[in-house]
Image (cartoon, rainbow, N blue to C red):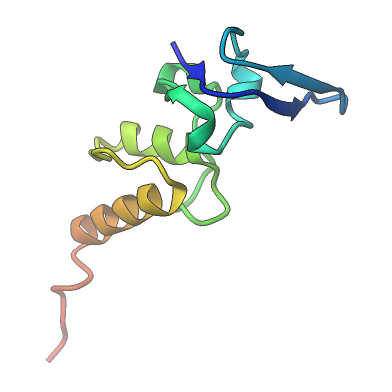
Length: 107
């Protein structure tokens, strides 16, 4: 189960501010909003993330939980990556390797 390293503030659908700390059980809707990897003592598991990921190709607009869910779904090993930039880079590199765009050339 995901555990916070510090206190965080998130907003519910109605705009109400909620505070969660290291000893709190964080609901799924809030897990998806906590995108700073340094906020977590134990990273959320894919099952904890709630909604999976948006349609289309991963991009900078995706949040960390969506990127992690995408990688899990596509069997992409993220290793020790925790930062959004690192996760996205691994996914895009893996995607490029699988697409073969670098090796297909016309003469």
